[in-house]
Length: 225
Image 1 (cartoon, one colour):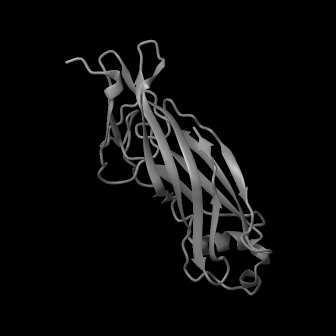
Image 2 (image 1 turned 120 degrees about the vertical axis):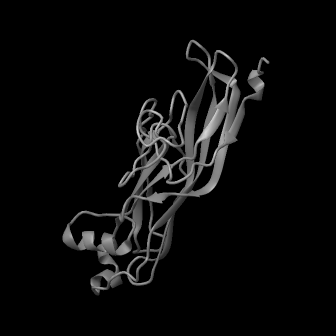
């Protein structure tokens, strides 16, 4: 039966196991940033960098693959987007930490752990045989305040404090997103693709009374890939 272009089906398929990330064919690799002022005068400000985004084109993920162009699974110490499922990375640099009363008093962290979340929009659809995107097939998959995964131990507040003590540069936590696989069905002769990625309303939070305080740094974005 001939499928209608207007009835492209996108079915969210939960990926078993580890989270997913993107890098590979069709990667947008956009790098943009935002400076976030301190919530209170004399407090800690932040710089957020959105980078390493992967938008798979064509889109043909294998939720069980740990290697190759359709890779979606993360392996040991794998903290970057996979080529099959797509995703992005987010780094945070904290400023004015060394001037905080708790830091000057030599206090350690109370064990707080930085967390991050964001709203995401992924646009999927079908490409014609000549490589053009057919906008009549587009469907947007949205997530509200999706949790971002930690890059190794980088979001541990005591680790970040140790970096401030050892070196003169500013430091902060690192995060990434491995998206879940989406099933995109296209009419005969057309190819499934991810047309774009939009990330908005990024929030980075910490609950640490000694140095960082109970703080959330927010930026509306948007970041595109």
